[in-house]
Length: 230
Ligand SMILES: O=C(O)CCC(=O)C(=O)O
Image (cartoon, rainbow, N blue to C red; front, top):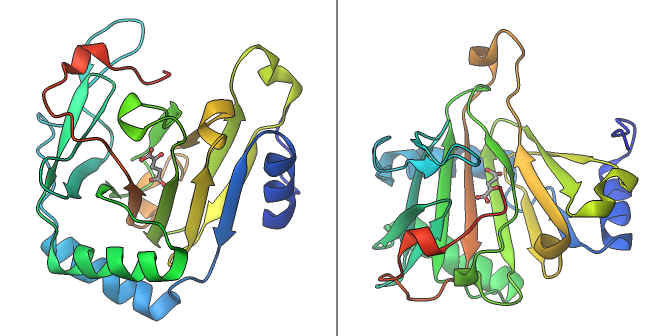
């Protein structure tokens, strides 16, 4: 079923939550000014993995390819996050990430032990359809997604054989917002952040996303044994 551009954010949430998702969205968790300052602090502190170290396995061909964005993981000692044939080890918390983790815990009660940071330099950077359903995240994954910088569309598409009976849902994530995905969202829906900006993607501003998770401490598991849904 085609996506309907006219749904408001609240209608998008109602649609998802009536169809096997549990998604919440708080547009103004931080406010525009503090979000801008926070993004600058994080860009100064975060050490992104090299493009070579951030390669993932391409579905179908099995080739290892560079990702169209920069990424880094931070977390408690011994944490890592494995997906698509790659492993992102958790570096020690930076001061700002440590404070932010506390702040989110106070606001939401969610106790994360790892954050995956994605840096989209412009509209050409993106992430394709996938579900955050790796075994490292446990049986009932919960993910908190904090967005900073340019507004980018975040899309949901239903998983499985009945997918064509559902709409693709698009929520524009604004700077300073928090999107929460609780179980069973990732069991029933995939998500992506598509390319934007048409022929001029350089005109789309930079964006940081921080996805806060609880991961297992299973660093030694072989990446090849793990899956991501596509
Ligand atoms: O950058 C985003 O907003 C999406 C990130 C994402 O889908 C993920 O880390 O699984």
